Length: 269
Image 1 (cartoon, one colour):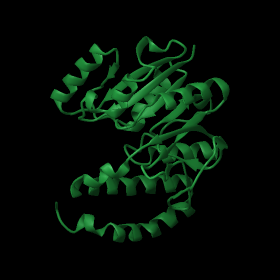
Image 2 (tube, one colour):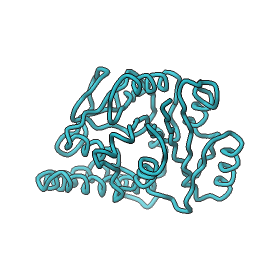
Image 3 (spheres, helix red, strand yellow):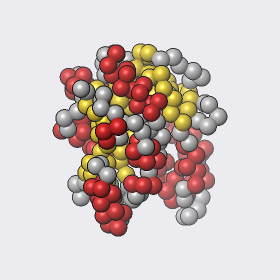
C-alpha cells in the first residue's frame, strides 16, 4: 500500500475555516473510509495568533489530523523540504488552505500513482469561467497562460503548487529540493524550472480543480504592496539563477511592472 501525505499550511486560520481541510475530511479518503490507499492529512500551522493555534491543535487531536508547528512562521519552502526529506511518505500532496480536495482529484491522483511513473504531477487549475490558471508556460520574464492541455507528460511547464503531487523518492534521487531563499512567491516556479533544467517532464492529471484567485483583490493596499515587493524580489532571484541574460531582461522589465502597479504606492493605506 502506497502512502500519501496531504500537506496543508495554515496561517492564522482555524482548521474548520479551511476549505482544503473540510473538503478532505468529507472525502472517501479520510480515516478508514477507503482502505485501498493510505492518505494522511498533515497541517503545518504557521499561526502567530495563540488562540487560533490552540484551537487548531485541539481540532487536529480530536480529528486524527497530524498537527505540526516549530515555533516560527516558517518559510513555505522550508516546510515543503521537511516533508520531502523527513517524513516517511511515497507521495506528498501540497495544498494551500482554500482548495477543494474532491474525490475526483484524489481518485485521479491515486490511480495515476499506480499506473504512471512520474516525478511530479499537477492538476489543471481552472477559474469559475473555465480559464486555465495552471499549468502555464514560462517565457523570458513572466508566465504565459495556455488555452488547453491534455493529460500526460509535458515539458517546460510551470504551475501553481496547490494540488501538486511529489514522488518523494524520485525527486530526492534527482537531488531536487525547494529553494529556501524563497519564502512566499516563486517557490513553485523555481521548483518547476529546476525540473525543466534536468529534463524532467511534469505529468498533468486528468483532473480539474476550481480555484478562485480573486480573494487577493479584497486585501488591503498594504498587504498587496507587501505581496508585490515579495514577488519582485523572488523573480529577481529566479532570473539570476536562470542566467545573466534572464536577469538583465527582468531588471529591464521591472519599471514597467512598477508603473502598472503604481497605485499600490500612491498612499499609505
